[in-house]
Length: 78
Image (cartoon, rainbow, N blue to C red; front, top):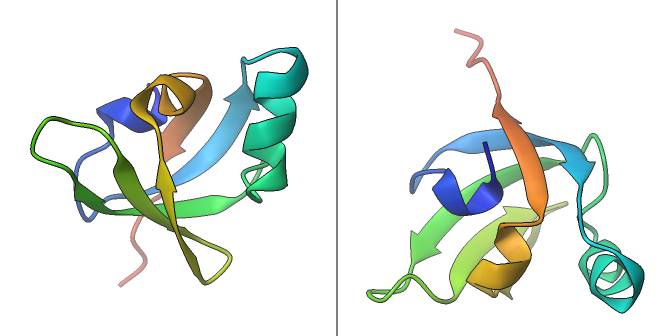
């Protein structure tokens, strides 16, 4: 599953970054690295950008970049 496929309000964990070169560097500079927990806050009406929270910071990420971030759902602990 990619970050783009995650639904609003869902919390996910980054499994792998599939981008290369400057694209991967840009994603990593935003703090999106393997093992990070990300919450999808909002998706714009046309799907671009996607607003997320990572490390306590709010970010807007292009959907093309979100397709390069492989994630898995985080189990909610009650």
